[in-house]
Figure 1 (cartoon, rainbow, N blue to C red):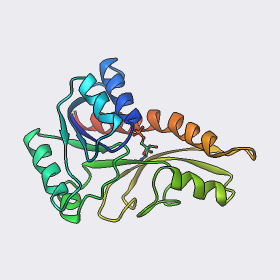
Figure 2: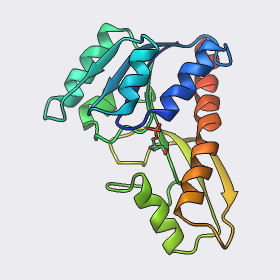
Figure 3: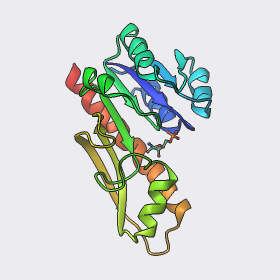
Figure 4: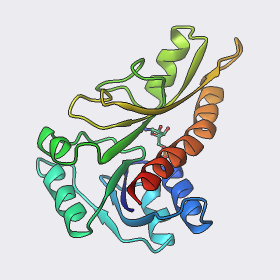
Length: 189
Ligand code: GRF
């Protein structure tokens, strides 16, 4: 399965995929494109791993540029790993069930426009939630609304703060993302 990984941030999830492909923990998966919508540390990780890498401007044409790259590289699955731009409806419809996203909450809770990164964790803590987790879901044109593929939850101890929650999500989400990619790769062979 040929995958494109879309990033906007530190790329620690991209790194988890790179490592899993290298160690054959993820079989039948090839990263054929890494696409970033801003200058971010994830780009360095992609270049260090000598992966084909693109930078796309955050503009009106972002979705069509990504579409063109994915078409040219014959991509089977598009993985949004901390990608912050919104892909347009035409793109989401065309690539229906071929785009997955990793979200740092138990969707449908704490999803939707503007809910990303620390904002999610702050809202979870402000509401004194007793549990949180990570979700991998298909991407549809409604932000964070596509069908859920996998979720992993954990309890939040009373003394938990933002650092704790960020760290915990970071630990939980990587194996979850790899598991989802593995599941789809196995289906495709
Ligand atoms: C992750 O927490 C992911 O759940 C969210 O954005 C963060 C990206 O982290 N969508 P990284 O860039 O992979 O380190």
